[in-house]
Image (tube, helix red, strand yellow):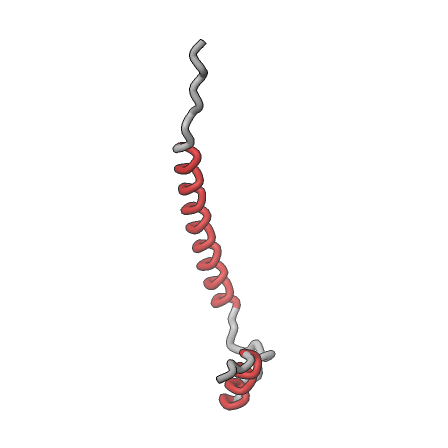
Length: 69
């Protein structure tokens, strides 16, 4: 069974529900600000995890020893 194009599915659902996808009514500034705040917070958490993992890997690199001579 072929997979339909996602754009067609969105267009079909919007047409069935009577939603204009270009209409911005209902999106208030507060909602946009909250969503942006949550996304920035999630990005900071992910960057913290990546930084901690990279620092842990860097600290585990063995120090080469000088040849005895």
